[in-house]
Amino acid sequence: MNILIAGFQHETNTFAPSKADYPNFERGEGFPAMVRGEALLALRDVNIPAGGFIQAAEAAGHSLIPVIWAGASPSAHVTETAYERIANEILEAACAETFDAIYLDLHGAMVAEHTDDGEGTLLRRLREIVGNEMPVVVSLDLHANVTHDMLTNASALVAYRTYPHVDMAETGTRAAGLLERLFAGETLHCASRRLPFLIPINGMCTLLEPACSFYAGMEMFETKQELSLSFAPGFPAADFPECGPVIWGYGNDESVIVDSVEQLYERMLAEEALWEVPFLSPDEAVRSAIEVSASARRPVVIADTQDNPGAGGDSNTMGMLKALLANKAQDAAIGLIFDPSAAAKAHAAGIGATLTLALAGDSGVAGDSPLEGTFEVEYLSDGMCRYDGPMMNGMTNELGPVACLRIGGVRIVVSSTKAQMLDRNLYRIAGVEPERMKILVNKSSVHFRADFQPIAEAVLVAKAPGPMLADPADLPWTRLAPGIRMKPMGPVFQAAQ
Image (cartoon, rainbow, N blue to C red; front, side, top):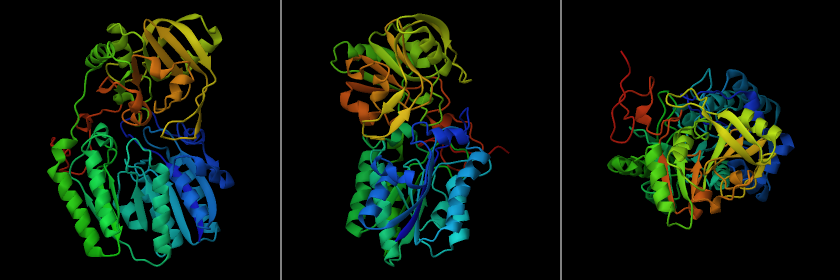
């Protein structure tokens, strides 16, 4: 085959404080920076879906027409300008090139200023160009809010099965396998069911129950019946009617795929209560961490989940840092704190200097405020970071000037670019060896577990003030589908009259 390939990734929290514009995609912000043409093929060695697809396609002897790959850190809406510039590059290539199939590396939870369904809109426009017979296969994030337009306009969709997402490249490989089947002339019937409740993102972790067992059961169905099955628990912070979990799949026998999806759907309904998540307050989390770490040989890790830049936070709230200081935590570190001004002042002052400043805390979230204090500059770096952990393995991220500031018994990793704390090297670029700390507070919800859980004595989840409310029932919804439960076993959404 001659395959047109492109990628366009954004996870949109419509309640978040800042939007994603074109420069955000140029930088990547935790994703690979924007690339075009042959440079896209260099992503073959990065753990993203496009990497796995490229490797599989090249190994099978196919020719690739690379267009563009662009991703940006989760945030509020993608601006109309950014969306149209990137989408139009893909659509223009579809008009200009000659090819046999299309592969797209998409997220599935993109909301732009002018469209609720970024992926569905792109796929619909693409179909208008290439017609209904062209095979179009798409890989999706586990947090996709899968829509009618996405299911209708793609020949096949396939989603990650791990959170933390360690199987991204593997998902691209599975997408390549589906494309081979379609190109060989197989008819793949689709079945799907939308669940009637939202799931907190912390409850989706596949290292824990019930997600671990559910995905294992799904794979057993798939293996026995030669099906392609996917479950996207959704991204529960996008205020539009098709937000929420979806189970779907493809198979040669329509009755078999319908029955398999229905059985998985009924299992989810029966296990709904298991998907709820308990949370700690900042003080509860810190006090528990201090107690456990007193006799531990490994660090206790606390997830500062409501300021997760991987879910729309700006990584700049001070609630957890203030709790560490109020409870006199020692040998603790927190990161990343996004404050370019503080990082610049630290670099100007130099290692060993002291700085009196108001650190971050400008999120605008109720209950958050800057931390005013005097800090020692312990370490400075240029912020170049290679990810060696299981997620994004092999990718290099340029964070700009980075500083380690110390106050009391706490080291603070301050960066000039937002990035989720999902790799231990993000501490090391600020001179902090994470394994030697007693307490680590990570601006992350679940992704950090891939690299940090193996070194953790315990993992705690805290709800400090932040823009990504961990309990979806706490969000000020206005446009959900009427009747959907806003969390497992939770209250039903009703639109204002």
